[in-house]
Image (cartoon, rainbow, N blue to C red; front, side):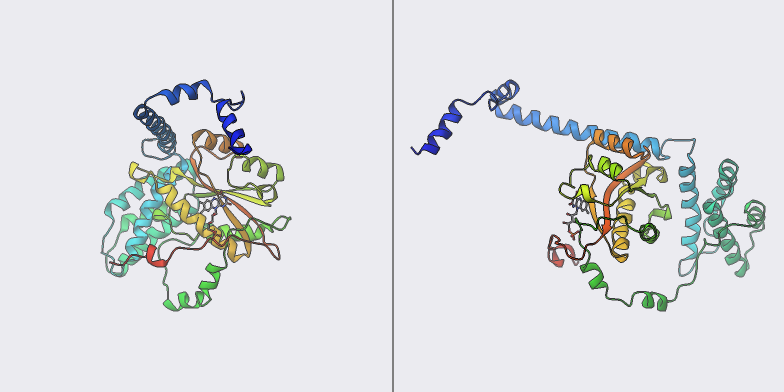
Length: 354
Ligand SMILES: Cc1cc2nc3c(=O)[nH]c(=O)nc-3n(C[C@H](O)[C@H](O)[C@H](O)COP(=O)(O)O)c2cc1C
């Protein structure tokens, strides 16, 4: 027996007090294997269930699934869903005359209630513009809606409102002109960046990227996304202390964004996962928009359990009605750096043809 083997054997036979297994471990290891397996499964399932319960409680509290007293955001979401139904209807190749009777009724009920509680805002302007276009579209086809017209005239704000809402014409040429660049180079040159120039980023670059990311599609145009922006070193360090994937570079992240999705934009049980879809799409768009600003970014997972989620949100002053999608480290890219290759699987693995 070699000296090393002897040493290893003596260690196994006589563990030091520190290396000795704990009493609970020794008791556990004496249990029959099937009971250990059952217990392990039960513990894991309970833990997963507790986390789902946390998500459920927050979804039910924030969304309008159960509430009768709508928060401003919930109310906005409900009205947005409705006026957007009109927009979608008018954007069809052949809109059906007189479509959306129920929607019109609800808008005539909900808009005045919303305005009396919260006043006019961008959403009410857009809703009235959609209604105006609806009336105008039907008038051209010889169908009049005098009551609806009177409702719009009496309720819409007379000046200072925004002009968007409804539909607009789009020429294929506009899309061709806007996309005549090397998209492949654009996508292939984006990498997760974990080394940054040690200086703050010009605020306009991040603001513009957020503005561009807000062009992401979202369910019924509800735009549940929010971005919390942390710039002070202590705040960034504090926020990153809750996150597990920033070791080795977190201390040098110049700008930190936390992307969330406001669950009050969602209205029913079937929409319980919608915040992750809309928030995920926005997150990707933001990463690409930052890339277009020549900024580097690295997504930082928010794969945590309930207690850590609560603690981080409290620390970052992120309200209970917002679900955290991810953190995003952002900064200017240095002249030279290394990035992980992260090769992709073959396209055939992803793209399955029928
Ligand atoms: C949701 C999400 C969470 C991620 N979390 C981390 C993280 O915590 N730390 C990290 O260094 N990279 C993180 N990444 C970056 C991935 O490792 C990276 O996107 C992937 O390896 C592909 O590399 P690329 O972005 O350079 O193309 C995350 C990416 C996503 C989309």
